[in-house]
Image 1 (cartoon, rainbow, N blue to C red):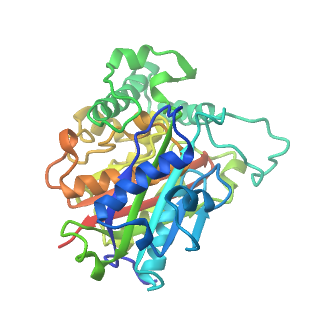
Image 2: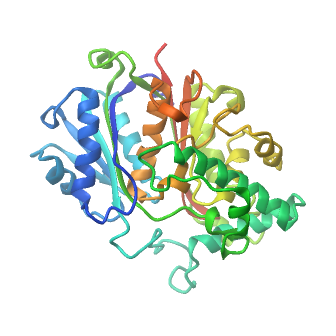
Length: 391
């Protein structure tokens, strides 16, 4: 299989302010992110040859055409659970790499606050979906937290403190980011003592519900130098879609997610990464819940199985650590407008690799990664993207 490595470049990106955007509509959010991307790339909307939009709640690509006033260019709408925006980016990159288009737009958007729904809906394709009682996401991931504590011999107090350290880290990073929904720090004690949402997960273990949008302008590597010197190159993608078999297995362990392991292996292979812990400089991952981020550390081969505790306590994943994770505050501080999250993650990697992340900038990053995980334990869809600086 041929790799997409170094064949496509990002030459512009934009990201709206995330939050409870009661004063804006979907089109306003798209204008906010897309026109920042246009300005960043030094182009106008009329220069775009095609576009992809990731969104759960909009029915077609017309929402993008109407927002940025394009006429008759092809616009493809993609929805793939929490992997939606990264999947849209992947498909757009494949089209550019294939030589179909030279300059395209990828956008993601969601207005969740107005919908009355705070999480992914659907599930008609799941086994026995019509007869299974609905289980909200906090309850699903609470199973993972309880099982992880049990498997690795953590008391409730020890496990809660580990999860609290992840939440405190992300809130610190989010406090440095003016585009984040939540921009204040919390303490370990606040996180541990917060109201329980689904035992053992408390309020600060769960990401919020937000509105937001993000966008990217991509072109070929050969063409990128005509736009800017600090363009960012794609290194690899991985996309793993489960068939729901984990939900049928009585031995599903809840302490690792096969979809993350598979998608990351594919992306690492494409990027030529053999030692992820040492080679990846930063990562923006799907911290829908603090336990999810902890398990991701191990599934992505940054920590050994059962070894995340040591890395969390040593500060390995902080801004000053060996592999900073969720430098922008993550889902914990941005919330999770489904169609926007993946591109928001790529936006942070883009800014970090360019050295433009302001107070949260890490030192000399060369390779960054994003990760999305949607669905339920035992039946996930996972997307991984890897980006790097030009040589």
